[in-house]
Image (tube, rainbow, N blue to C red; front, side, top):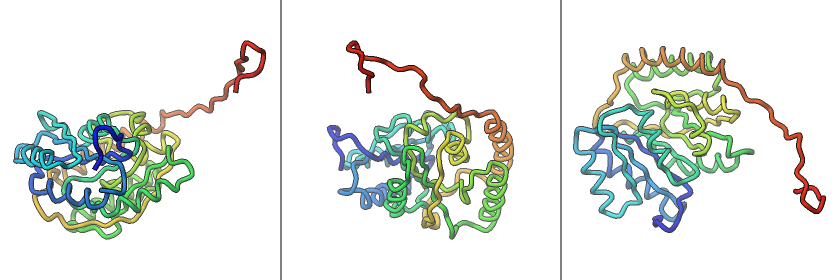
Length: 257
């Protein structure tokens, strides 16, 4: 368990809204995976919950969990919750998980190993790929359609952008343009910034407690507008290749290294 004197290497960001029943089980799973293996912290962002989520989070803090909690007074959406978590994170490497318990924390070590083995980790995002979805058929069908359309139009080369399990450098995320629903386009934003996205198969579990806070049709309609905006953003991005033409000499005349 990290202390205040030990700067965490990893920050596990978990956005939640009305997930009271999933708080303790997911935190316990994260701790089982990371305790003794990494210097880490868990950062929960409560996006305006109206159930017992705040009380359950405070109970976990009092129990000694390596947990920091932030709360939106009213719901601002998942992207805003992720942004709040990352902006307050102390770790240089970010792990994101959905708060409904369907992402499996046991996948973190494999994803982290893939991240560390990348040629340029500071420019790499490792995205989870739910090869065996545990959702109802309408949700699976809409997700396949959305992922295929995004992949074709945005060329993000990512089979499952909607998977909440991701690992990326905090510095890269903080350079992304900020907008509502941006969490659906993190791979495209990483590539836009000159980075690389690697997809890793991960476990996907049935939701054991609670209910989804987002309707399938609502998500589909908003995704269309978001996709159009993302296409606009990608077409107006630029990455200049910079080289320094000046040299700085030391007072003694030697070129500074």
